[in-house]
Image (cartoon, rainbow, N blue to C red; front, side, top):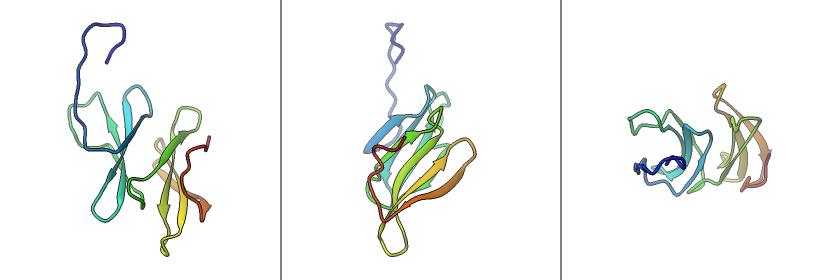
Length: 111
C-alpha cells in the first residue's frame, strides 16, 4: 500500500501467523511448517509467491525480532537437540546463522 496514492493492492503471500517488514521490499513471516516452524523472507516486488529465504525455527510459530543497522539480523527462537530453547541470529545479508543465547526463548527485546 502506498500512502501517497489512492491506489491500494492486496496480495496474499502465505498463511503466516506473525509478520514484520524487514525493509520496504521484504517481509519476514513466521509460519507452521511440517514438524517445525519456518521463518520465510519474501521479496514483495517479485511476482513469485516463493520465499527468497527459508529459516527452520523450532517452536510453532517461532517468535522473532529484527536487529542490526538495517534490520539485517533476524533473532528467532528454536530448539536445540534436547528441545531446550535457543535464540539464534540469521544475517539476511550474509546468510549466516549463529547461536546467540542457550536455554532461552522469545527474543522480543533483542536489538
